Image (cartoon, rainbow, N blue to C red):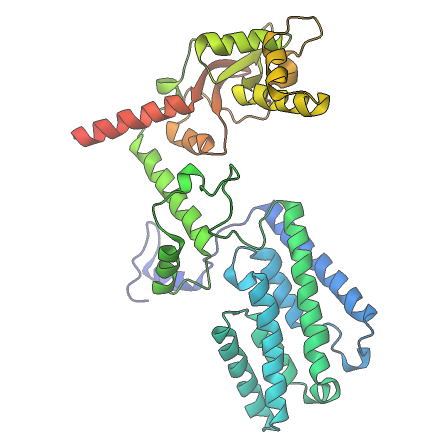
Length: 396
């Protein structure tokens, strides 16, 4: 504590007390609401399931308190290794078995409490199933010897195992519904393009085993998964790359002489413009110059694929129809364009746009003045800016 240095405007006393203050960063209201609602609903459903399973309500063990702690971890910290299915299910169940084993030894009650908690922690470590509520499972059992005597192994099977499995299943469903990933990402999962390659910005040149060793060396294996560590390192490198761009803005690098189309433009016209200019994106504007959306080459390809499947024709034929059919009923620009796009202004720092153009993100970012498009920053523009910045930094 003596090594704490006061920050600006902070007294020496406050600096000494800082380690005792909150260290968890602020959480968004949407995430807070999702976690609280999910945990509450899951415990409600879990209680209903256990009571429906004809648990002996007289024992008071149809839903034990540690399930509430498990729900907090599963719904509030789904990325934690402590919240993963193996940790939750195996950790809680083995802790219950540990307490039951200690109970069979007929030890002094105080000794039984300590022995149950200690044995539970030991078996969780040995099986790599560390789950903090497991300690509470063991403590709950050790403090209720009459309940253990009456229920025996049923205590482990019914309120503990069934309750934990129910919570894990509901957590998986809830996080999928709310846009979170649970169980957490694995190092060997397919990348964003359904191949073994990771997203370009996450190719660190480090093997999963090396990342796992880093976590173990710094004693962080229980706090962070290998894939999440990879994502954090990649994000930090991206921020550092943004710093290399300095004060460069979108106005410095954007393409200005834009080729645009009206929403009523035929798909054949759009295809001709792609062929003529070699662009990968064309903005769609109305008669007053207000941007309505952007057409990407991928939009044409995806639409041709859909038409080929719908009309049971070859992809090449569908693509040719999009690119060469001048008939009045042909597809229009408004039907192909992408509208949900991030935008920037002239003064937006290029470093802020860099994450938007990363692999799997936007193909291009329109630069706006009110509702009018005045430029566009493509991945090519961004690569050129990074190359120039790197060359300048090397010359210094």
